[in-house]
Length: 364
Ligand SMILES: O=C(O)CCC(=O)C(=O)O
Ligand SMILES: [Fe+2]
Image 1 (spheres, helix red, strand yellow):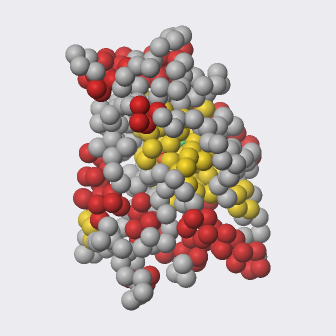
Image 2 (tube, protein in one colour):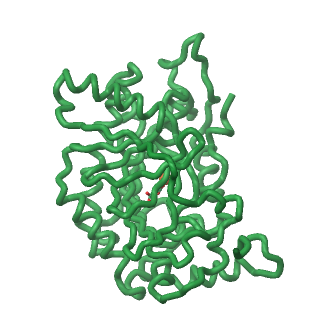
Image 3 (spheres, helix red, strand yellow):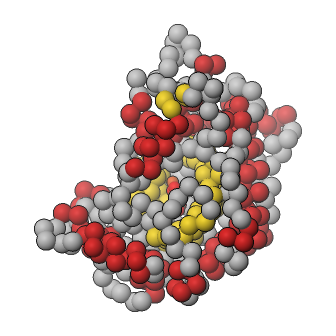
């Protein structure tokens, strides 16, 4: 087996990474070129690769049916299911969420079409400035991570500064805007149910985000000729409140549960929701932000996933944040110290996705 790129003496990793980035071809371009060996900087260290495989356990993340969420009788049952899933798994799928199947299909098809365009067309959008507008690149942490992963992504910062609509690539413009609206509705409902699950006012978590700092990310995981030497996305937790994820039927996502990697089997029409670090902190550890990763894709059909991150928007006047006082009791004291937006953002943007979670740093 090839050694991890980072540790080979005399190998100028940075030079190769930069050449790849400058070429703007992404992993989709590498895959299409017919290579049979992946560049060394994609090879992950043996300790990561030792358990890179489909899960051997037969358990699955909870699937929650949101049909009839408006009726009192069903609602209390659904709140219980969502609360338990968020506490035990930090991940669940929702079905009957009210978004039409054709919208899901059109969104996936549009993102696939973006990534399948000729290199010269995509290259026009290729850049590495996160934080606003539109950014297409391979691996958002390419220069920070220890090893690169086998995916490319189109990021669109939907808010608080909405992109100029013309900035969004024409091939998926309508679908990105439409999906953002639909995913926001689902996230608002889920955040409401999550708030009620902890006995808080319905709008509590939604108000923390104002559903207002949203990043749309359309990933592609093309065929990888050496899928056992790399990953699609390295293990990480998401930083925000909740994430809503739409995927095609090609499997790859895995969730850490009781120290084992569990495959997330695509459910037709389902949407995946997961809890982010910030929600774990404000819920004082009641809800769990759980590690997840994506295996590199060994199937000839590309895996597509579309993620919207619902991040924190509103900071307390003090400029500090931490566990919600409503949730603290003498039996359940604060598990985390307060922190500032600057600390949170600095931690997230200064290192690779694989860096230690912010939660570890502020644990009391
Ligand atoms: O593609 C996936 O299934 C997961 C993507 C992900 O975890 C992320 O973008 O944070
Ligand atoms: Fe993630």
